[in-house]
Structures are given as C-alpha cells and as structure tokens.
Amino acid sequence: MILLGAALTSTTAQAANVQKKRVLAFGASNTWGFQPVDPKERILRRLPFSQRWTGVAQRALGRGYEIVEDALSGRTAGIDRQNAAGSQLPGSAYNGLTELPEALARNVPLDLVVLQLGTNDLMSDSSLSAEALCQRLITLCSVINKFTLPIPLEGQGKPIKAMLMAPTAIGPMPNNPNWERAETTRKRALPLLKAAGLEHGFSVFDGAQAVPAPGPDGLHFGPDGHQRLGLIAAAAIREALR
Image (cartoon, rainbow, N blue to C red; front, side, top):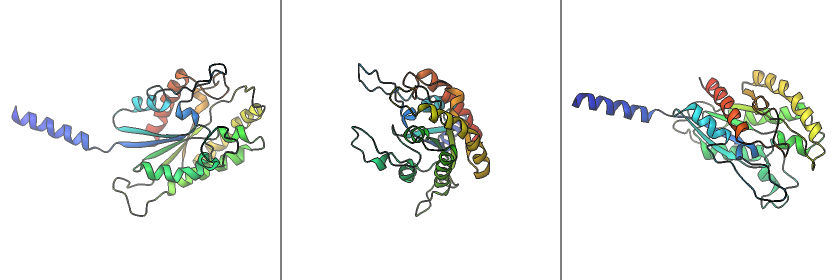
C-alpha cells in the first residue's frame, strides 16, 4: 500500500508539472463579453467568463490548456480610433497593432494567440476593402510569429502560433449606415483570409459559422452564440496545437 501510494503521488506530481498549452485571446467587444445595451436602461453588461466564448472553449479543451484574455471593446486591427465618445483612453489604445506586442510580453509563455479583430475596422471605414482588411490581419499574425524577448524565456521554446477568428456577421445598425457595406466586405474577406493563412502559416476559422446572425444591436451576441463560438474555437485550437 505504501508503494502504491507513493506511485500515485508521483503520478499526480508529474501530471501537475506538465506545462499547460497557453492561449491568448486578443480581441474586441465580443471577446470582452459585451452585451447589447438597452437605449432606455443605459446599463453596460458583460457576460461572465464562464459564458464568454473563451470560457466555453476553456471547458471544452480541459485542464491541459489555459486561455487568457486581452479584450477591449472598440479595438481595431491596425488603426487608432478617432471617435471614442466618452472614453478616457487615447485613440492609440484601441489600435491592435500598437497594443499587441505589449499584450504578448505580459502573457508569455504562449503557444497560440487567437485574434478576434476586424469588425471595428469595417464599421469605422466605409472605404476599407477586403484586401486591406486582410493585410492588416496578416501583419498582426506576423507580429505574433516574430515576437521575441531580449532574453529567452523559460517555457517559450517555440515561436508563438497565430490564429484568426474571421469576423462574425454584421447586422442592421440604425446609427451606422455603413453596416451593409461592412457586411459585404466581411464576406469577401473570408476566402482571402483562408488563402492568406495557407500562404503565411496561420490558422483561420470562421466566426460567422457559429454566429450567422448578430444580436439586436447588429454586432454583439448572447450566451447561445458564445456557446457555439467557444466550441468551434476549441476544436480549431486543439487542431492547431496538435
């Protein structure tokens, strides 16, 4: 019995020492868990981690994975935000390209970064083409793949992998007449992103597969959408880190 107990203790200790695969979700409001705001009530609500797609993916992936978040409502894939009404942050704080290296440095070691960005670029720039959006996201993936610290970090033996969540659907928005053009461009960008992933070595999965129609505000979705998105994300993460 003593030998058996020692063996079990040793096995448990070894399991505890196995390094988890760490995944950073770097995104905007739908990673933050933003819920549509009732114009009369005017109260901001955020889904808890357990209901956000990140928490759903964490449960589906199990103990061998750890998902951490860096999410900011309004974050873009590569431009400063000009009209952040009421925000105490500078426009540059919303620029994903500016903020990504800092997020990587905060959270390493990392095996994978999932980018949930692009929708705010589409909504804020009516002239943005699918090709231009694709290039912004390719640039972010390159930043991830090439990221290094001045001194090698224990546990970060390999370059960080990049994964794109192609933007979810954009629906009618009374206060933004650009939504129809944005949705058309979003659809055009999907095959370009998939082709770019094959060419540049990053993974892509389609967020709109899980959320084909957004919530009442045209952009954000509730627990059911997060549940579906989290399960699809978990399968994509597991495949990327096999």
